[in-house]
Length: 394
Image (cartoon, rainbow, N blue to C red; front, side, top):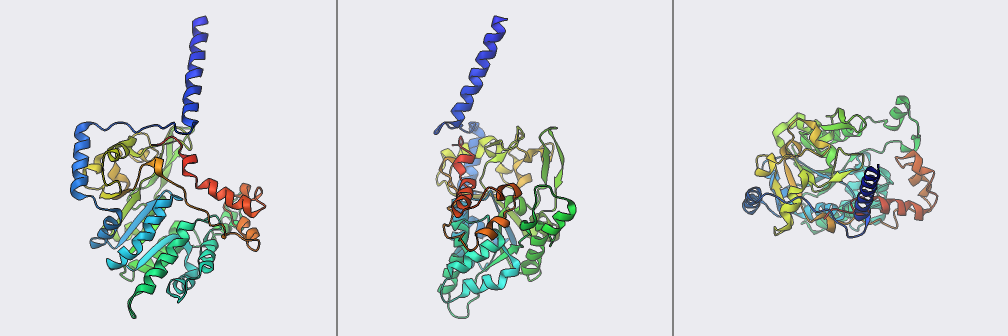
């Protein structure tokens, strides 16, 4: 009995120590080492084929019409990458950037903003606010200014660069903690967001024969991959999300669409909100010794494409899930320890629009807790704190 009690106490000590180690600042969990033969193979491929992210993304328009680029959300350097891409895209003959973070019914206003004689920061804020008051991030607002700067530099008569809002603003003000289907239909009064965004992509770009970069969360941007809906209590999938924006467009144009994923932690099947390095850490371990760190490379049809994963929720999509099932291309910019969340724009919420900002939050419970501008902005700074979300990744 004493032996069992001592063993139990030892186990408790080990578990508590492990928890504290993960929670302490600076306590990091490194990715697993990559076997030398695989490391050599992947490194050789990068040396031969990888490009700087901007050049890689732009190069895809030589073979594809619609390139979807999917992100985690709120990661500073991801939004900054899209900003830096705008002049690169234009030089490649691409004059359209479609974004999840804007309303299509305000498109005339967006076009006026990026072609005006002077830049109107307040108008940019209004465009973002009217899509989502929960998106007060400076790096996304800066996309409009980058387009305006490019357009101001163009010679007279040259085609203008456009930022096209793909979404609409649901009636989040009607959201309640307990929702019926009837009430959900009132909130999503223009239908599902993915269906709506796909419709805009089709009308604005596909039907007109225009090439476009589509910037959205990877869930919406995915083309060939149907996201499994994982039931953590039962330890199995309960279905698939197979009608995202990217999937709908892919079904219509097939080989003319390409999906690039930006590097972010993957949710695991261990428990809700658990996470790990993608593919068990192969990419992160490989990039420790690789320069330059910022690279874009093909997944489908490359040595990276056959890398397996067995721990992520994504892996439950099929019996022998491999990387190329998930996306076509990939961008790695830096190790997770160097990630930063987006900056909150302190002027995004004012005394005049605070009530509307709170009313249109897509979370009924949180609306009751926010009564000041300071609380509002602090909540969204907290949401974007990458190091809080993923404290132990190198």
